[in-house]
Image 1: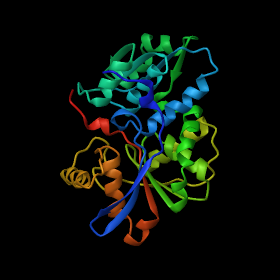
Image 2 (image 1 turned 90 degrees about the horizontal axis):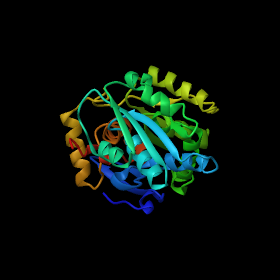
Image 3 (image 1 turned 90 degrees about the vertical axis):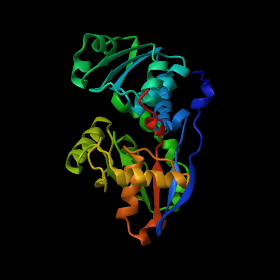
Image 4 (image 1 turned 60 degrees about the horizontal axis):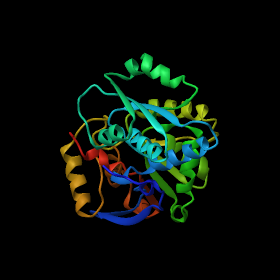
Length: 289
């Protein structure tokens, strides 16, 4: 695979109105980089700005083997001249598109069967504590990543809608939206991976760790289909196929569940005031490589 630095340049997101049965919604697609790595590249760019004045030439990162975060950050930092040490974990041997990108752009990669085994390993601890290597938290959670997301919220299209709906996985994009818009917008997060009580506690912890002052209640809803993180659903697969025929491309872990939830949970009268932010990550559907 040959890539140039130009592929990680950040471009404005593109919007479209999509009809499903008797409802329609405005979807803003933040499809950045190869395989629509998406909003993660904005986070990586924000973190890079933080590191420009430092002496670091090496970064280490850890995460799930097939995570969009590792693929986006390893590609971005490698193309910006950094040496990459990556640590991955997974209980299965499955390798998808994200995993292939991560392996290609990592100078070294160590794999573990569990997150706990990874975190206590001497190899990971050596890189994490090295004065010459910047250690990136899982999911890229960092104040610098938050700064990178502000370029997204400044797009004028957001001012046309009262409600913004987005997936909540790591929570960074959701917290960033709450901080940026304050009380001016209704920000609804679809909680993916954690039940709402646990997600509330997790977001509060991240808010404190990042020294944010959101000063408002989180508005979270559960997915209306395939509620557990890795669960599959024939109905969801059919919905994703229907959307694909309309030129809206989704994956089953995040965007597919979220858009299905919006169409099946929101009243028709509400939909013209709602913007759904599609954060990319479609390369995750390329798999078993």
